[in-house]
Image (cartoon, rainbow, N blue to C red):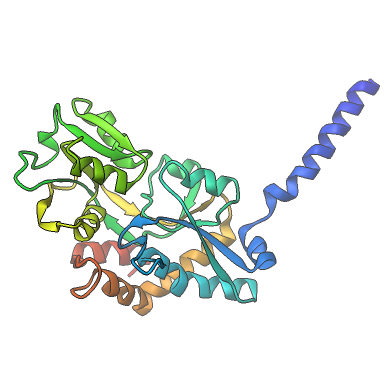
Length: 284
């Protein structure tokens, strides 16, 4: 009996010691440190990338700094610094789970499977998967990839969809976008698949953009959200408030125009359908 009681006491002490670390919510953490740490990308223009001046910039980063950061500062009652850490499809959720980052702000698709592990903000961008090929390629869409060598990013939704629905393709997974595109440049693969907007970004930054084409209708739906630790309702409410106010007040569309407008890094006009999708989620 004494042994049982001793074991119960030991477990209780261990659980008590572990509870604060598990229960500490993100806003408490930010209030204590004065830092909001985001996981984002270094080579995913124009969402997040390191430019020629060695500055970490992009659409996703601007959304955090201009829309979300002010709401976080209101919630914690102090100035907050943004700290950036690189995150990739395989590392995003582990970085959140380990408390290494507080928010993923990149090109992460909100899916039911991922919602089992993390919570997502309101959708801040909507796109779909396509293919990048060398100009003149016979690949014009997903119906042409049987037997073809297709580059994907490890851990991406595109990789998952192709493995499940198009097993006749020869998939080759790469750790990031630059590696996948380099494989295409070197002829190691016949096409590179990713979300269409990201492919347009890579094409625009390529040494010879006219050598490449983005082809095919969307074979997937890719609504991007910002991911955070599951169950942290207070932090999610703050993040969503920042995005909601940006959509309602128009600041979101100013940031969009900066990056995707005619004079932006990557001209990509927002369609009426996409705008309606974004506004519907806030009841507009």
